[in-house]
Length: 151
Image (cartoon, rainbow, N blue to C red; front, top):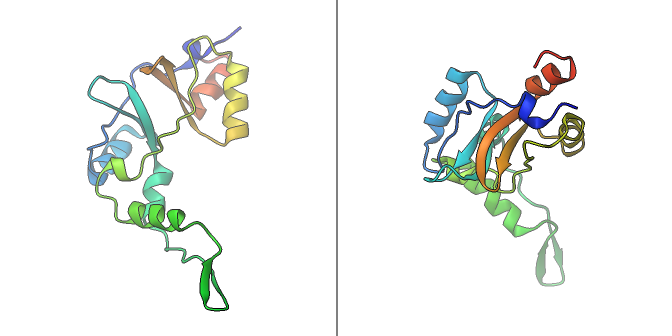
């Protein structure tokens, strides 16, 4: 049975939380990758940043709907969500846009489980870890190669 270890990319391009947005864009383009794990100074995984995080910086700001009830104004959405959107749009470094809750797998995870996670959670990059230590990463192409026997 194929496992994450068999199909993962071991030479992983990573970034730090202090990496600038411009540097991140250059890294993604140069390496022809769709995202990168974010690691701390000890190379421990702390998050992931993707093309979608960069793209969402440049989208239009969604102003939440507000209704007036008597003399009160009530926001129909969380004010925290608006704050997060503004922070992403004004991002200067990776710390402002990266995802901190990362879906990960271990080296022993069966390829079928990795495929299920990608499909169900709608993620395209899954870091392979041991504890918090980054060992590799699995992208959609790695998964396809594994499924077709070309890993």
